[in-house]
Amino acid sequence: MKTIRKNNLALLETTVAIVRCPDYNPENLQQAISRLAQLLRLDFSRVNSPILLKPNMLSARSPQEAVTTHPHLLLALGKLLASPILIGDSPANSARPVEDYWQDCGLKEVASRLNARLVKFDQPVFVSLRVKKKLIDVPLAAASQKWPIINLPKLKTHSLTLITAAVKNLYGCIPGFKKSLLHSQFVSPQDFCWLLLELYRKIERNVLLHLVDAITIMDGKGPSAGRVRPGGYLIAGVDGIAVDMVCAELLGLKPVQVPHLHLWNQFYSLPQVTVTGDSLVALRDVDLPGVTFPLQLLKFPFFNQLFSALRPFFSIFPEIDQKSCQQCLACVQVCPVKAILKPPDICLSRCIRCLCCFEVCPYRAIRLRKSFLAKCLT
Ligand code: SF4
Ligand code: SF4
Image (cartoon, rainbow, N blue to C red; front, side):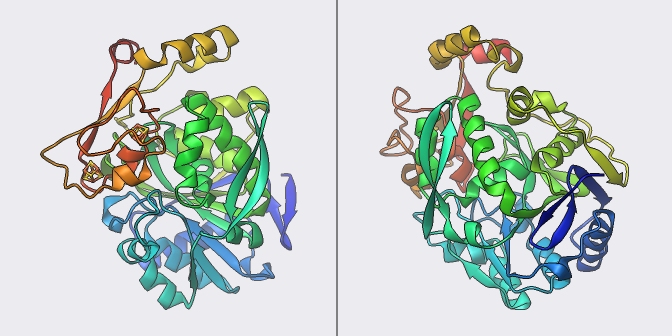
């Protein structure tokens, strides 16, 4: 097994460890995490600096809603770490105070029990990324560049990227509204996945471990309005692509069916993954959101261009349910192109289908509608 060195640790490069864990009972969690560490031969006591725990804190929602990483996972992990702990993420809607997210997601209590520091992702440092031959400067939370990270994603389906796990969770290292703005530069799901991958390549040298919370997962209208269901596993590894491949398998998908893994395979080839630990039983009847583009065809430039031209006819677009809308304006604040001026009206000619509004609506008042071609082809 190949190893790489990061922050005084020798890490198994493309090994993914799987451990069954039925619930968020603290004892079960601590046993499961200790076992994962053994399987991966990880000795956290060797880390010689503070560690940043990066959960999914997409929305200010309670842990039971499975939108965010369960706080007990951070608590159990934190108790096994010898180094000082920082906890940070940047939610999708930065217009709301981050303190509300810490409170509602259960992270405030965890931080106090671990004597950890909650950090705001509002101080950016800029990194250069080359995406689609274009050089762009992307702001990243300074904390994510300064400290080694343990990435703690929640496994969910995602209406734009099909699944969200290790790679997608690192997008939260971009502070606040800048995340939404980047959607307007990388509009198609494929281009957006390209951005995700380049960002992953930039951050991953700083990541000690990806530990996916798949104990309860969300399927259907993920990442925020789907169905909560038991997943039963913790999945961990050092290589985010390998970890996402195993997460895809849990959802009954082949890696190449997942847009960012498909793209990675085209650019770099998917890694040979060594799986260790408990056997993985794929979940049955997973409700997948509509696949937004025919992956196999998009590797041909002709179809890629054709898709861009046909995009208005082949897309999923948001629609606000007037009865459910509480006029909280979260969707207005997060829309990168000002397509929502006064809910429930959405200017579809301006909308770039980034689905940020769908992600942040706390009242599930935004539905996704498929265009005629999308209905026919997905
Ligand atoms: S659609 Fe949702 S996010 Fe937008 S104003 Fe209504 S309740 Fe708030
Ligand atoms: S209306 Fe929603 S999907 Fe359309 S651009 Fe704005 S945030 Fe994105």
